[in-house]
Length: 525
Image (cartoon, rainbow, N blue to C red; front, side, top):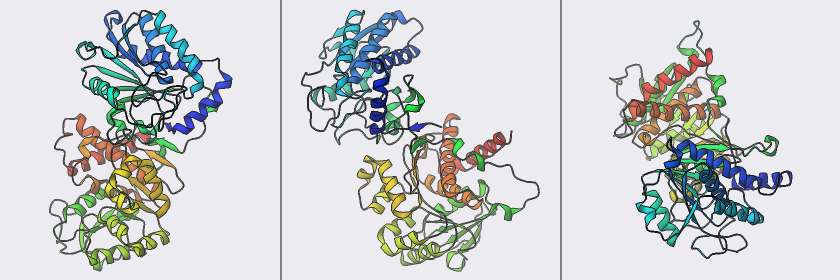
């Protein structure tokens, strides 16, 4: 299981470690780890490799200077673009210089490490590394094999602007791999958002992050800017790392519910799902959710239409179509919202569903109705049965009385607030989907890709999660497994050439079935 740590937690770990280590040990270890990661990315003949090192004025820059020295000693042709401490640079905080809105930059934290940074600079200068002018026009023209980003670490709180903005734009246009040390410069380690509305961040192909993994590498803009992430603990005693309330999603979290089916079973053994939605002109959404529920193992699946219920689904006649007004909402696990609409009829159906004793997943229009009606919210809070909410950022914003931009600026905080406010498991969809419990525990999902950015994929997710709930999975594990499987199905389809461009939501359903069965078979053996 991969724990995630906030900036404050990383700082506390550093403070606990400092008295136990020789001066500069963390910076030296970070530099060695960075060099090792860089060497893995270089061509076979290191002596011919051209490496550009970006060394900022803080401790992250010290890590970069140590990396530069190691790579030069290994024979690489190293050029260092160095921003010294104390030199006024737009958007830069330097050790010993108070800069409003910017915390101490660097992987290793505090301004007290400035002497260690000086030692790192000395070692880089004594090596064969070549220091170049930041205004050197050859930066864009040189055929680099690798760029190592050590401009800023986890403390940046102000957007990169001016010359630094231009430099990052240049780096992002280079045709080579980019290795970020600890964190791509310009990214917020806690949220994954690019710092500042007009900010910019290095787009790395790889990130070697230090001490502990950071949530911002895996959600919002993080997945586009961090690339492949590896963690170096810098040889710290594991006892220095506290238990974390944030983790990356993993099969281990829900594996105990992946059980082989007994021969002596029947359709009633695996639960009933009722998808409630399908207002006039919006029948596709509940059908997608219902098909996903059926193919992920629910024993029986009903589609309870708000109006205009068809006789059956010609492509999936196993689904049972009903009018929601006539359906017993206490008889099945409920997936409420796909294509439900916002009419008074939809509001009444949601109120009935919330009053039921059934496990319930609220998605799409059910969330919009909740956001607009405090009485429905009070009903939600009074529920005793399992409840899962699956908003996308705009739906989450409506529930919180915020904007989608504010939700995206702190996805983890938004998911936590929703889970606490409504006492439900919350799945905040998006790049690096965030799953939150009312007690503040958070998991970020690492499966999935842009193929999911198309209409109907959320309906498939809601049907899948509802199916697991109907089969007796607890709400937390059902949400974790559904999000993981949903993303994995998209990953498999893209690997097989079916996306990401043009992948339709319905194509996920058979891929989810295959992934789920393989996981159950694996667990059985």
